[in-house]
Image (cartoon, rainbow, N blue to C red; front, top):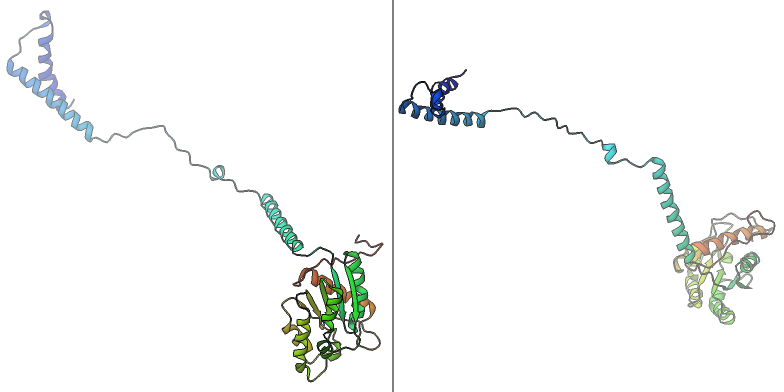
Length: 283
């Protein structure tokens, strides 16, 4: 029992006896003793409240906080799911590009004028099947052994365009001038030929070189608008006995390459799907 409790028993309990019925009283209590008892009670309460306010009583709780499981919060998608989504997006992009490519191709029926020097003969024979298969009209005009200066001075290309009114011209010229030492003097003639085409879509097919030239391909290419000149000199050809003209089969392969380039890469894209031969597995 502490000191405060002892004082409480000594002074407070006698004070309480005044409130007990007379039959239980043994001795009367003095006023001083009553005053001290009241003062002690107040003091005891004050001290008790101070002790309670300043004491550190541990708070025992049964509350437990569960650490969240990160897998429950976010479960990453499986690898298969990601691959499926990636594949869908890839197919969508490829399909979109293919659609855009096809939309840029003029699929309407064309009037094609294929003309030039003797190298145009093999191309004309090969392009006949392309015209038939893709619903085009093809007209061929060949000027054997012709030169750029001749086409320039006679306005031959302009006259052919006025006569046949083609929607596109495929022109091949330069094989007879591969080895000229004065070829750069022909640049004005080449520029004049290009000008003769006017607003008609115009494709110049370079000669099928069998040896290095002195500059004819370079001059033609730098004067033609972008994606309108087809460079042939780096292709491989089987030759006729003269060592210059491609064979019929080699001309067909040449035409396949030109047609694919015109349809997919040239400035003037027209429909030139490769013809499917009867009995072919590609049908």
